[in-house]
Length: 67
Image (cartoon, rainbow, N blue to C red):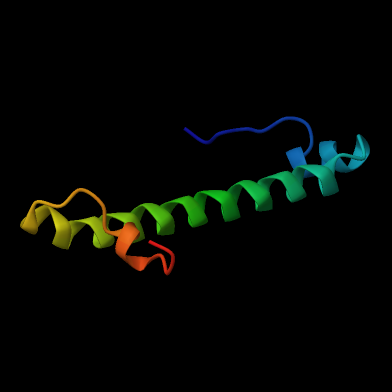
């Protein structure tokens, strides 16, 4: 059975309400935030993996110059 759509496209609605630009900006910011948090989580897991083998609790302490 073929789907029938009524009304306009959601982007058309956002244009009519003058919200398209704002919605696209928020979506882009959320995507960047998600990607950054994913990379940070992956980086954190690769930093802590060697210390788990040795039994230490913190790796970033050795990376700080003032420690």
